[in-house]
Image (cartoon, rainbow, N blue to C red; front, side, top):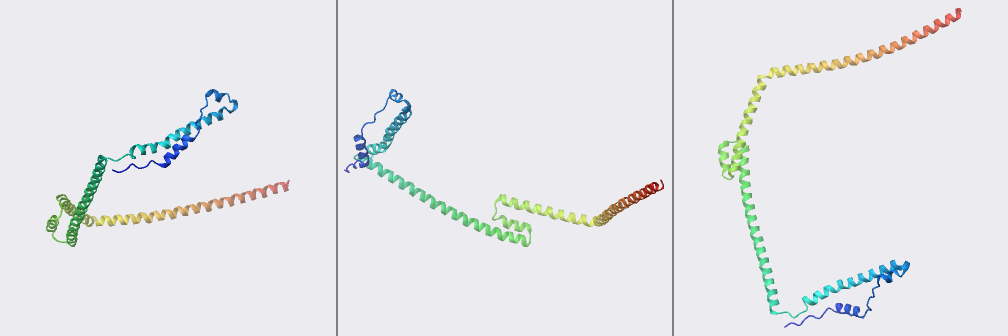
Length: 238
């Protein structure tokens, strides 16, 4: 039988100090009011004393829990319960480790299988890019593809065929309407030339207007000078 652990010396020392300390005396409300101007300070002192008492209870609580829960003579039931808990924890740990090992094996096997499939697909796609019978290549690729992927490849081949047909139709249209495209290009070029000429003509017109305004200003100045001369001659004759 194991002996009980000794009580915590810190807790005993703390309780001893509490027992040796003089009891806290609480003041009545009447005593606080009789203090006059010092009543506020007395109230604060009383609150501080109450807080200290509550703090003592909080500090003592962990030691009480320790004494009640752990400082007792262990029984056979305690030993059995502890041993069962240890065994259950070890079993759970072994189970997790086994699950991790199995998961790693599955992931490794899946990665290897995916790598093989990617290699085969890459080889088949390389063949498709290099040319050859589309249907034969599709059958070869279909051996390593899922049904959905095979259907997608078929759709791609159909779309590719449609694109080729459209490209051929566009080439035929270009050939058919080649002259029209050429005439349209010539008209676009003529329109661009005409636009440049119009811009140049507009600039020339603006310059002409500026010259006309300048000449008009000079003509107005000459008319004013003539009028001044005529006015001076009239004054001279008078």
